[in-house]
Length: 450
Image (cartoon, rainbow, N blue to C red; front, top):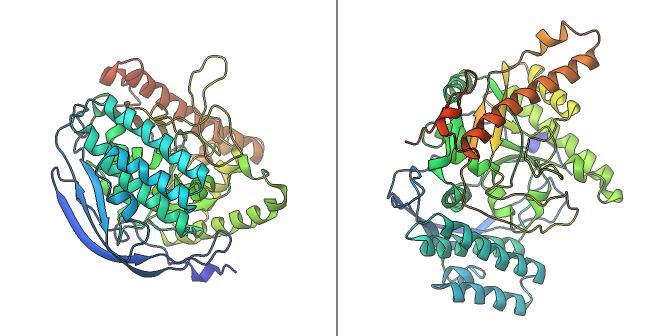
């Protein structure tokens, strides 16, 4: 049974997260003991006990043809003798040994065939993408990052992690946040990446320091969105990058190839409307779980200094079937209005900013929404971008409307239109190769890592 008061108390923006170094060529070493034991209950309960020794180090390499601000070599880990699942992948010194580890664990029955096939496919797609970057150490990056990824995926298959309604990023003893950053970083072409209106992120930091809440209403393009956002902001606004909380659908909480990356993010866990009725007998359970998550979000907003990212479309953007053009999916009015009311009724000053995100080339979703878990991961090396605009006043819109429902619809459309405007600027900069020249009076592009 879930008891609201048993959730961790709201944490403030500048005190809840351990900061990790991003200095080029920095080496961080630590040893740890951990074994996760989870009571297998539906979605809101999690219990930990710790007992496995391991050491980890993170390497960052300055050489990269992608001109990233601080591209790492990789994150590597070696486990002690009491870790039953780490030796298979972390001891691999070649691609052949790494892939042989998958075969070995599949043959022993410890790794389901479907997961093993997904891991093999992921390896080859990730390898091809990293090699597209032209990085002279691409082979080392691929082997090291995939060894860690396979280790974490296999570990979770053996002992599944269960997410609570609010999940705080697991930074120690293993730093899942930096694992995700270092895994996605080699896929970003920083020479062709941009941030719009960077000054507004400094404004957000000031408001968060004052105890205000910030909500970013954004489109959603890939499973890697949280890492992309954090990578583009880590040079200028690392506290925003590390402390942001994402409203996450259940699929990234149960897919074995995605879960290790989700563990490294602050999450409010919900069931997406797009998949709410996939299994009819679970509809009621999912609705109750979403209600618990909304209560958790309201509790945290009342504490102030919360930074929350939400995609009111309810899922990832997809290309138009006939033109193959990508644009932000329409926002759901009820999602926008529920979030707005949570912010307004929190008793704490709050601000809603429209955000646009363009990164679908890195890891596009399947062309259609799929019910089954285990989608194919197509991966590429590409430029990405994000932009944020000043908030839009709901009261200004409401005063010009005849009824509340009309005001809700117009507000949702106004927020979406601003996201679309920013998205088109990013599209011109990245896809049309206009670069910084694509800036407009309302969207000022920059590359703050340079």
